[in-house]
Amino acid sequence: MRHRPLDFKLLAQIFITFFRIGPATFGGGYVMIPLIEKEVVEKRKWVDSKDIADVFALSESIPGAIAINSATFIGYRLAGVLGAIAAMAGIVLPTFCIVVVLSLFFLQVQDHPKIEAAFVAIRATIVALITYAAITIGKTAAIDRTTVTLIIITVAAIGLVHVHPIALVIGGGAAGMVIVGIKKKLRLPIKFDKETQSPFKYKDYYFGEGI
Amino acid sequence: MLWDLFLTFFLIGFVSFGGGFAMIPLIQEEVVNRHNWMTPQEFTDVIAVAGMSPGPIATNISIFIGFEQMGFIGAVISCLGVVTPSFIIILVIGAAFNKLHNGHAVKSAFYGLRPIITGLIIYTAIMFAVNNGLFASFSWHTLSLLLIFAGSLAALLYYRIHPVYVIMFSGLFGVAIYG
Image 1 (spheres, chains in turn yellow, blue):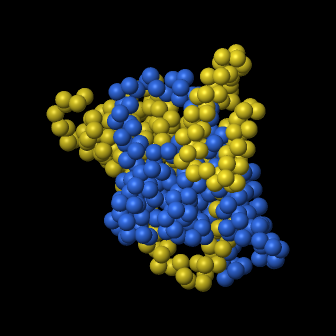
Image 2: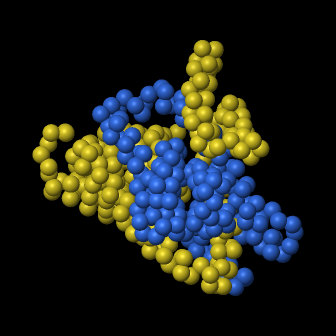
């Protein structure tokens, strides 16, 4: 893969393919997954249909947006580092332009009384949106007593003691490994997730999931 | 300042497991509490605008904040900062693909990560509710905000209306009653 001569046509194809997917959806995340699958598996035949699930699974388990990750990963498999760059640029660029334009627009109009009035209401809606995200992700996280305890500890740790969220995230990963290790030693049953398919198989996604 | 932006979003990008709203408390901690780049209320507006744009919300937030702080260059730098960690990780593990995602270690880590992320989002929801006056002392204004909150949550949770429409409708409603 690394010693392949520069294939500008392929790089351009990678860029254009993901560029077209980029602006197609609001909310990003899992909404983009079926679109990516259709493009790279059915149309371009870049990835086998049995491999694509692995690509998404891996993209989900590393930090960052699942759509950007899977695009970058597919680009990397096709054409090495340059392919990864082409894919990532392709999927990020449309969004980038739209957000810059929207930000510019918002900063121009934000002091207008009508806009201010709109945002008084919108702020309450954003609180609802975050609550909604908490409920939805909570459903997949709170699978046993241990995980429910971890949720409570987290809220207390950040709310009362003000532990930095980054420390909590790193600690959470470590705690997961330790707890699973101990449970194994004690021969306690462990359930990693609810008995469902991977989330990217769902037609039913929640906004912001996997972003 | 540019370096600050890059580093802040680079750090955020590195720990953004589970995605989406899981990143918001991290961004809030860095942007509002540590760097004082904006007030909690302004940060709520950023999320609203980011939520109305297509694409991943955390990336959108980074672009908006970068743009607000340092213009176009700031937007580019923040966006690069937030996506670079995943880029590096993909290059590093790209070769070892297939062995990782089924790995027991990854599953175990996520067993602990998911509840932490849930806790962070719950905390964020509470903080946002406080900062945006949902828990303020009783007044008709507070009551109207609570009603908008309840209506939006019902629209999202039970009627499964797309968030973009919920935000837009809420905005129109705001113009009608507060305008």
